[in-house]
Length: 145
Image 1 (cartoon, one colour):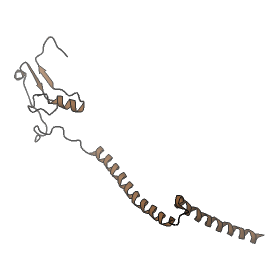
Image 2 (image 1 turned 120 degrees about the vertical axis):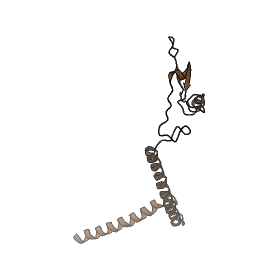
Image 3 (image 1 turned 180 degrees about the vertical axis):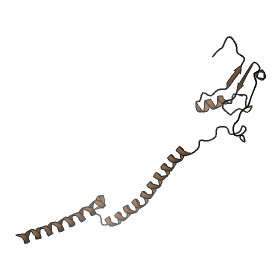
């Protein structure tokens, strides 16, 4: 009785491994299992996987690098042409120099900087921004806003 159990256990183990081998072979190349070129197709599939996996990892690495780079990099400089050699750009004007009314540039795009020449309107149309000049004038009793 014990010998018969051992024998059936061995047979069951052998049957298990043989069926597992058959199933894995079928699963590996399932759509082409009945064709004589099935082994060649499995090598083609493995080559495709061996090329696709590194390409996918490279793409993932580039995406992660781009995200970290854009998060930790310094933003681009806005003022690219006016007194770039100085640490901080500043101009001092006195009230008597201003006269009646003057418009001062805030967009750094004006050719007549520090005075506004309307360059911001082109920028506003391009980007949808609402940038405008600083208008300095003498105080009136009537203020139009």
